[in-house]
Image (tube, rainbow, N blue to C red; front, side, top):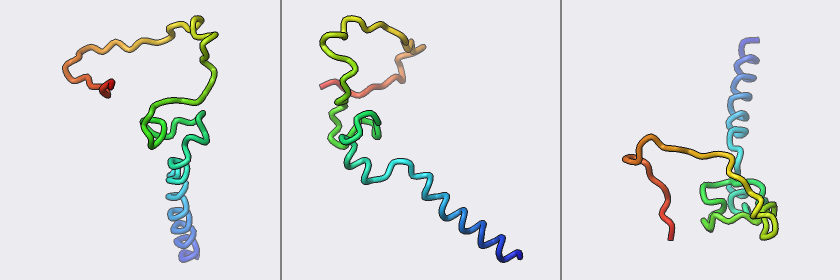
Length: 84
């Protein structure tokens, strides 16, 4: 009985590690196929930081409103990606 419990614990441990990997390498390589999911820091491995979604267009961009602002307390250790 104890060996059966140990076997179940090992089985659950081994196969639960696989479920922790929510984004597979294959999904990262084909991230452009699912633009509704931002899978990496720059969106895709091409690092263009561009979304193919069309909710914001030339016709409705003028109706956008500010909903959130982040005001940092100090800029001494505040870093961002450079704009090129």
